[in-house]
Length: 414
Image 1 (spheres, rainbow, N blue to C red):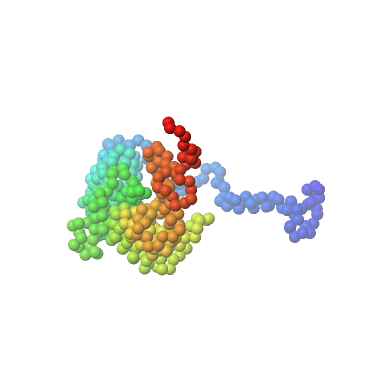
Image 2 (cartoon, rainbow, N blue to C red):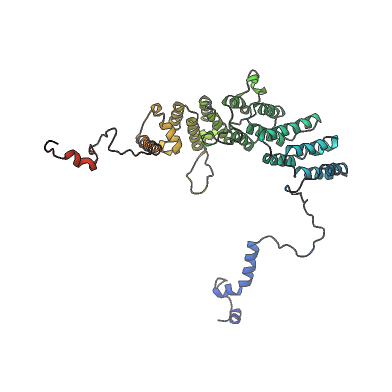
């Protein structure tokens, strides 16, 4: 059947026949192309009057010589040109010394200092780039100096610089730095987002098995506990005037609470974990649980299940297994639903369990097998079932390979 014949034949199938689809093949393809690529094609040729975004300098470019940079700032015709000159230099700095040179030039006059104070993004990028050549305490000292210069000039410090100083103080394990900047956050009423709160908590070396970020060592428990619950010289103040991390915590938001419970557990503050558990039991997220939007194929999880599992796990991390078993009993979570490492820690304190069911017995035997395997690997010796403590079963007393030796008849004198 040819195409000309198809064009002459009438469409008697309301557009559903093969002939009708064949006649409409070109319009259909055009429609499909438009649907697959809804954006118009880029016009060819030179376009007049088209606004182009600013071309920012590359951070990998060579730094502008200091005398040339000073001349650029001096000859800047307005705030826009001045900020562009400061941005160009900051995006190429990678040492604290180079950053201090830029700050020194900008702080000579009030109007140049004001233009530098609003360039928090280039400053933050330059400070992060300094980590390649300087330690975290040095970056913290650089940031503290910049913030101090801004305050001396009477300039408004961008909250992002304050939060960045908090993160570097946590990285550098600086109790003094945490105290200083937490006080600023509290006095100025800055709102700390959940992401920022978790980021600061994560800098306290609370990763799996307490490792976390150990580039600068670990926090002392006594100092970290001050950062969390109150500094020693501020505990006499009323709670509205204190400025530790606990005063910033929003317990109704799980994004804040789960990191807070984790860091309390790493500090071995089992009583603090228990107090948070008591408060958690009365929250709407547990009394009126909601479904969580977990990835497709996962088990259905509610806010209550997520929170209860987390509290049991962190209670075992705190070291007080009596509290961990008590929380597990109140959650009514089946023992075999827990994570393997959580079950192993709970089995170390089995004497605190009120009810021991078949699942717990099976997990205990599996744990003994794993512990025995670790001993065999460490001693390079294999322990067989036929030796050691006798089992309560009807199995052979000795190994089958030695049965003939024990059953051999006795002969004459040797």
